[in-house]
Image (tube, rainbow, N blue to C red; front, top):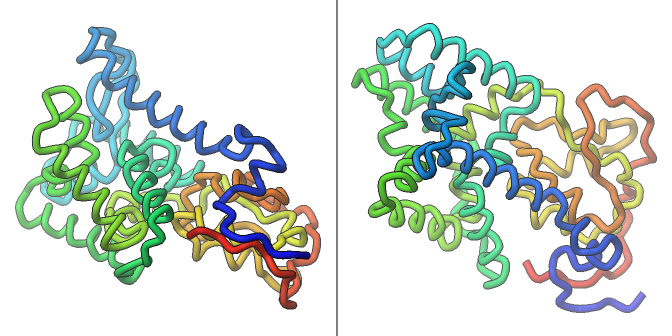
Length: 305
């Protein structure tokens, strides 16, 4: 086969499935993020109070409490026992993300995700190097630091600088300095560290990764024998180290992506022209085709990374 050159990421998927199917989960994620943001802004903007509060703590229809469990944990460590409704809200959110998948929050709810996704898109377009890549344990150390600072200062420390909370308040009271904070995160991911904020820094992502360690929702490389080494899944995945064990597993190794780092964003499903990946559950034990052979693949089109 004659190699083609400079094919953009997802080109083959668009040709095989059409543009909409090749962006299905990306479009659904954007709709989900906008929907969550809109629910919180309907009250302050137009007086329709479906949700009162922020992602840190809210009340739905004046009845159902929801509390960010990381905020709740910081409050306890700081020596402040929250009201019963806050405790109930924290349990509801904790159980939901423990069952569904903790880092689903990062890709389907967090309003900072479109900013970091845009930075990665620009990073690829400009052909930049991946830059500084701190160890993956860095965000765990930062999470521990946040909890220690909360205990020492008696405050919910992360909420003082949390860009998610700052963005929400900025959209209600005026962005001002918040634009600088958003710009800093964008430039950090673009110029300093590819996927740096979500992948190496954000303690919220670290916390939800721990919460969803045994969650049900999983991506599976169930059709891994059809892999043609285009590498598009590795390019678009914000945590691409999670792909290899499932895609390149030997023998009867599971095709499930079991790493808690996986955000279940679905981009690997979108960009694969061969439909290698699918969403499933962690107990999916259906037989799969043999893993992709390790022999040298046919020449492929070079990718614009």
